[in-house]
Image 1 (cartoon, rainbow, N blue to C red):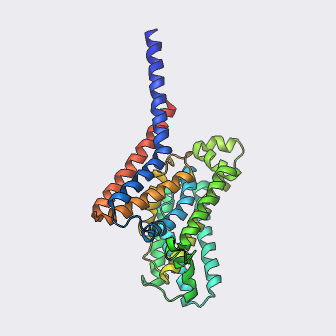
Image 2 (cartoon, rainbow, N blue to C red):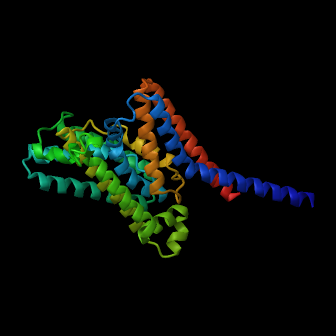
Image 3 (cartoon, one colour):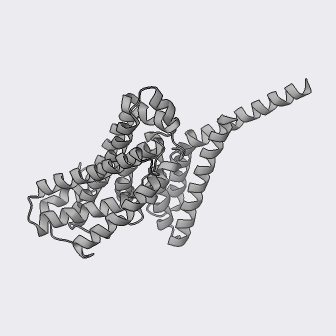
Length: 338
């Protein structure tokens, strides 16, 4: 009888811990974003200015767009550490095709988007066909794509693009509204549209459900009739397309094709996804959580800059936050298995 009571108490304690972990990984992040916003409003100079807030959104737009695809990849049980190099390669290739080779800009953009999609789709095929760990495979891309970008550009920016091209990466909409000053940056609009699209994909489509199923239990998903090969190839193709697209956006903003952009971007994107509650073990995560993770990192970085905190300290803080997010995710999974 005593043993039964002890077991019931242990189960109740586990359930309480699960509820706490669920709260921290879901509502907890939203509350953290709100508290951080309030704190910075009171303590960081000029934080609440419309110019600064729009700069925060512009700064996280590229990360946010790619984080949508990274969420799918990590939910499926994989990871992609090559996205920063893929962005740089796509930017460099665009510059070489459109400027050095004289291709029409529209055709060069299409070619860059297609090649980015195909390279990652091939990576997804190789990963599934021969069961090569995604980390090893994308680490190869991380090294080789950056090297290829520097090779075709000699590590120098390729410029100039036509002035009209700057609109997509450096333009604004809703200009003239007093509260917005210059308007809303185009990349911010694109990021918000991307989050809406991927929210629909993950919550309302068969493909989205397949991604969760494969990440949760690949063998069970295969036995239930899900094509693991097709789903993995599609997730990698999507993040390849988004990386190439962001390479085009950055090229539009800086008006050159460059091999030196997006260094470390892959780790910022992965950090945002993890902080947003997506499990590195696969099978769990949400686009909404990723959106909050992107905002949290953007606000935190901006606030630390405004307060004059050392860049080295900023890196330490971001690293500790990632550690806490992984700990909460691991605790939640281990308690659910208990």
